[in-house]
Image 1: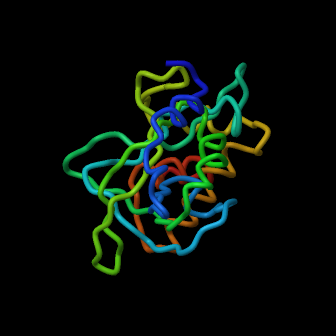
Image 2: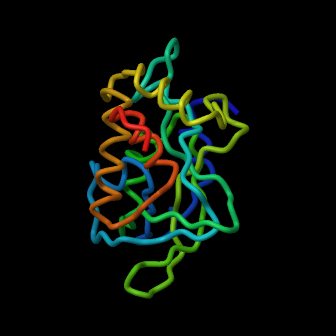
Length: 188
């Protein structure tokens, strides 16, 4: 698969026939909603873990020095806390562009923290996309993040803003916390 997934997502047309849909954000979408939404609620996605295994050649890095950004990997024993936004399909044009670096739309079940379960849209970068970097030890991932900057800013700032947003939600994500400690200079 090429890095730019915009056309693939538009052709798939997932949820385009709905008047509104829930969108799940687990990375910068938690704290940076640069699109119109009708409602916003904390939500949990079961069976998935957040990992910094996706390369960012367009936002938090460059083709020569890619950053690392969050994606989801299937993990039956885990869950991922994020933010659900009720949106209209006209927002897809913006989101498909924003998430074009290897992310595909998926329909998954979200648990809103108010107890309701809804079908939602989630952008996931899979290992078969050209920007996939995959797993590495947290020291190596943190070093790559610390040295990457792209048009949207420092990769380090992205990770620390996500860590702060998760703290504000009362969430402890072991992978994010490990990277945060390294990026802030502690190894506890």
